[in-house]
Length: 137
Figure 1 (spheres, rainbow, N blue to C red):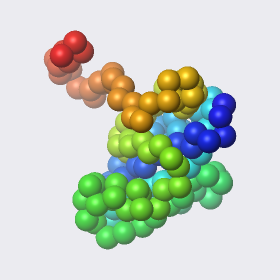
Figure 2 (figure 1 turned 180 degrees about the horizontal axis):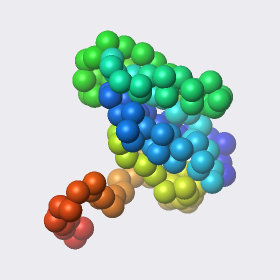
Figure 3 (figure 1 turned 90 degrees about the vertical axis):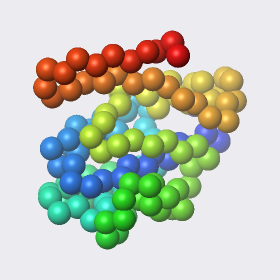
Figure 4 (figure 1 turned 30 degrees about the horizontal axis):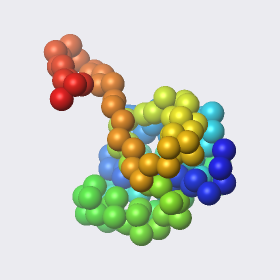
């Protein structure tokens, strides 16, 4: 992989303790690691902050920022202000990535030199809810 391609991922965290470990496991277990992971705890009142602290203490490229609750947009902006990567990715704390996401992204960026990449997602529900996405439009 090209050392000039540095991807920072920013994850705003607010009361996501039910999903956060799955999210963070998908981040730190990538086949090619992120160059930087920025967690912005947005005033969580559940166990989210302590989960973030545990992961940050065991992962050298994970940075934990803490702020009073100001909403996900401001949390993302705080992450951007602290990011060092030349590419920035956003992920919500209740989402997770396939384990080869960074590898694939870096391959595309190296080969095609995109300024931005947008990719699709699979949606899962906890209950039996019918939902469809038009992937062609």
